[in-house]
Image (cartoon, rainbow, N blue to C red; front, side):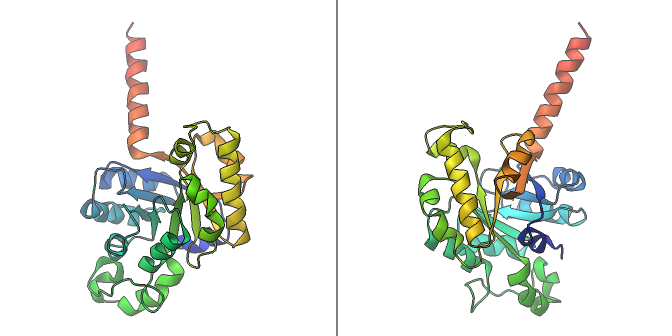
Length: 254
């Protein structure tokens, strides 16, 4: 398996991307671009769990480890993508410690959690190495919870204290919108929220991550303790590249 969780927990700065097109081809292109991880987005992307499998297969031959953002912390949502071979799960909008506990429980087999036992799935080579997978899963599967609301920020210390939470990941657009300051990423309310999140994570030995508002923000967030950084998505990059190219072609044709 790829050593994503070990690299995250030792504090390496890791760069990831979002996959919104539900396409194995664009997943492979992004994975080969040099990212450390790639997030298959089932919360906002058009694909479902079936499409996620193809993207995981495509990413397996690249340096990028596949993480899946599920729709909720319901255990069945995590089970399905873990059984399909995800290296980690991102849980959106975790506002309280009990929600973080439910997310962690969905990631772990009993007695540590509530994940169901299934032998013949992709994660355990369709039944050939289930015991090895089971024994390693607690130490290799990454649990990421999203901090996206004022309630989450108010409870961030309790969320960070939950055993099994590895990364607190800020969604800047959702957080700023919920604070009433959409995309005002220099506003004191927003800066206070991201600093409070990083401080809580540091107190409890956890890591912090964020979808960078823009690529030039890398050092701004690294100085604040953020090491699990995302920038770019397959859909956005394709859109921007296509628009830039057509604009250039039309300009040259004038």
